[in-house]
Length: 490
Image (cartoon, rainbow, N blue to C red; front, side):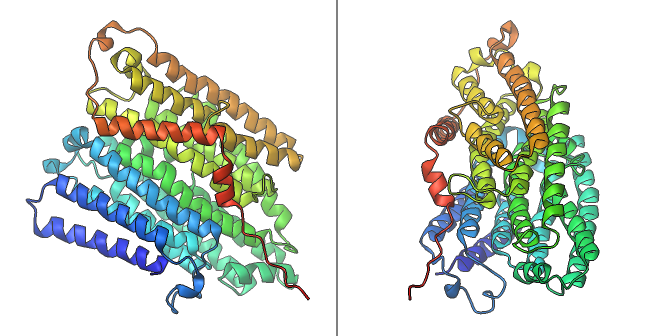
C-alpha cells in the first residue's frame, strides 16, 4: 500500500460520512464522531506501515508527488492534528450545540478529513498546479468550517471576512504563479530553480512573480501585512476550527513556503538574496504586529490569535535565515518549530473549550480563580502558556532557540532584536493570563468544573509531550534530519 492510497481512503471515507449523515438524519452524532475518529486513527496506522518510496506511488501520480523526509513528516503531522481536532470537537459538544441549527454539527466530523487529505497532498506537491489545487481544497473547506456556528453573529462575521480575504489572496497567488511560469517556463519547483540558476531569464519579471506568490501564501500563514483577518476569524470560529486553523492550516502553508523558498533560493538563483531579505523583513514585521497588539487583549481567544501571528513571524525568520543547526536545514527548523507548536496550542484551546463547556466565557476575567475550580487544568494551561512564551525546559523554548541561533549565524541583528522584543512581549501577555488563573475570585471559585476523564488524560499527554520535547528534543531532531546522500565509490 502506498501513501497515496491512504489519502484517497480519507477522501472516500469523508464523503461516505457526509452521505451517511444526509441519508440517515437520525444517526447520533456520537456514532459519527466515533466513526470519524476511528477512520482517521486507521488512516494513521495505515500511513505508518505504508510504503514511503516514490516508486510505489501510482504511475499517474509520480510526476507530481515527492516523498522526502519533510513530506512524510507533514503528512503524519496532518493526520495527528486532524485526530486531535476531532477529539476537541467531541469535548466541545456541550456548547457547540447552542450555536448550530437543531444542534446538529455532524459535518464537523467529515470536513476535517477532506482538509487533512488536502494538507497531505500539499506536503508532496512538486509543482505549483498541485499546490494550488490542494490549497484550495483546504481553503474552501475552511470557509464552511469557520462560519459553521450559524447562530453566532461573530461566526458569521468571521466567515464573511475569511471568504472575502481568502478569495483576494487566491487571486494574488494565481497572479504570482502566472508571472513565475511566464518568466521561467516551468510550473515545477525543480524547473523553476533550474531556470533561476541559468541566468537567461528576466530577473525583474520572476522577482515580481515570486513577490506575489509569497504574498498569496503569506495570507494562508497569517504573515504581515496580510494578518488582519486572524483575530476576528479566530474569535468567531468554533474552538476546534480555530485550533485547526492555528496549527493545521499554518503547517500546510509553511510546507509550501518551504518548497517555494527552496526553489527561489537554490544555489545560483538570481533572486536568492532578495527573497531572503523579503522573508527576514516580513518575519520581523509579523512578530511585531502579532506580539505588540496582543498586550492589550482581554479575550484569550483573540490573544491566541495574535500569538499565532507572532509565531508565524518566527517561522518566516527561520526560512529567511536559511542556516543549518543541529543537523537541521531551514526547512527542518520550521518543521521542528511546528512540531513543538502543536501540543501547546492544542492544550491551550482544549482548556478554553472545557471552560466554554462549563458555561464560562473567553475573557481573562473568566480565567480568574481557575486554580481553585480545577487545579489540574490551571497547571496544564500554565504549562501551555509558558511553552508558548518560550520558557526554558519546554518545547516552545527549543523552537525559539533554533530560530535565534539561525539569525545569529546570519548576523541578522535587526531581525534578532525584533524576535527578542516579540518574546519579551509574549512573556507579558501569556503570564498575565497565568496570573489571572491564580488570582482569587470568590464567585468563580465556588463552582467546580465538570471535566471528563478522557479530557484530563488527553491534556496530561499533551503536557508530557511539551515537557519531554523541551528536555530531550533529540528524537524529534533525528526524525527531521535529512537522509545523507550516498556517494558512489570508484
